[in-house]
Length: 308
Image (cartoon, rainbow, N blue to C red; front, top):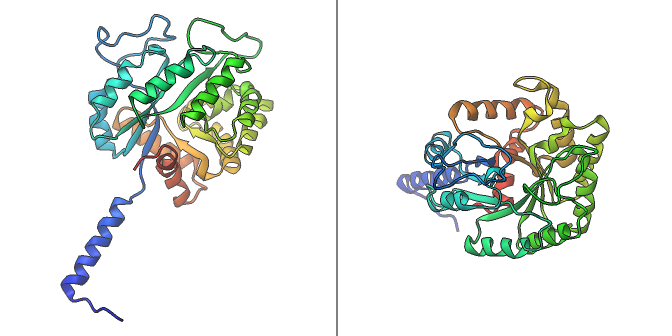
């Protein structure tokens, strides 16, 4: 049976379709931002924090996110706070709109207490903690740390595997911040935890390794749950913006990982930074289709981190 619509019904149907289309507009998601409290008495940096950054507080950031049209954000819990997640929790409690944020946690992956501490944090903030960040930034020839600041732990340590297993059981990603020579060690772990999402922060800092390091890094794409994060491009460049010398690395990653496994991060705290980050994405992926760039800007992150 054919149903005929009068003009008013037809117009209403067009409006409804337009509204539905607008609601499904491609999201913009920043998968990598750090926030730092202005109130150092209430939210002090940890005594073992690896650096002391200037304040980048929540309140002005919320205004910026609204102006930039950023739909969701992954707050990457930073090293200055070490394993004190108080400011991350403050951001969750005071976000606008609700559901804007999810975040990562930072614990010593070689500490036997870490699995239980992760479980407690995830239970306290259901659906909010999406990853455990692990730092492996010690250069070749420099030993990993067994204690002290939470960074540069031995990726071959038996407890490391237990931390990965606990994160996997909790549905958390492993977010690796590393120098390229650590790629083979990451591959060994990824091969044991094939159902665990692994995120390669800041393009694996590919430009900070030797040419021989690039191939093992790119071979991590063989594991279907490994994602390449397009952020920190300047770390892999010897030039100023727009970091043209890093474009071959980005293209190689696009060819290996595909548009569906690239995330975008580091969109800044202000409109000039956001505009520069947007320009950089378009320059670095000028060979990619508009649909591919939509996936990189936010569709991949929306699916991976279960944003509505």
